[in-house]
Image (cartoon, rainbow, N blue to C red; front, side, top):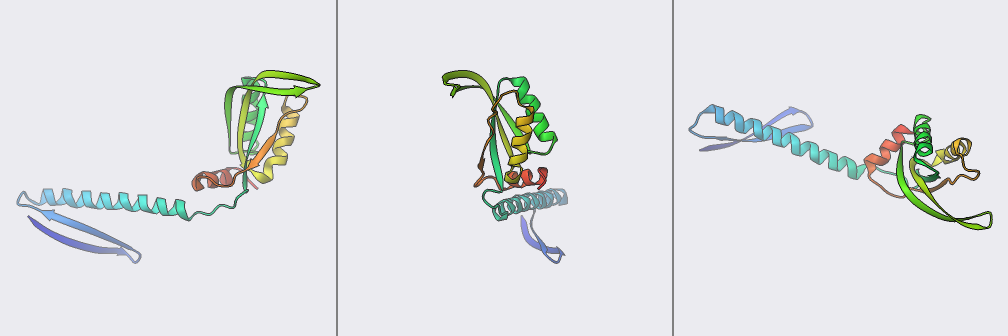
Length: 166
């Protein structure tokens, strides 16, 4: 078996290294080996670039928030969620079914089944989000609370920023 290293420079900043293993079986085997080597090099290169990109993206703590809203049922939750996303008040709304809320209301302890909305948005959009919920929610006092997002998956946080305008 003959092994040779070949380095090519197709662009000023891109170098391709390939190892060619040739045997007595002919050039078809050599071509398959070269193609496999080039494919693997490109695959590993793209994985490495993606990992570097994820590690090098920066996020300022508190730029985005996770907001929470409780709803009396699935229908209200879906209507609010769709309206929030359509109006670009949030990038995503998760609907969490079947939560139980225990709270005091008008001097009595209450217990109700509710649906929770978990909303991902820009922190700057929370006042507009709260106004939208107050205007479209059946509760007299709708719950709208938010927490700033300190850290997260950089591509996901970037996606929130791309979807929700400032």
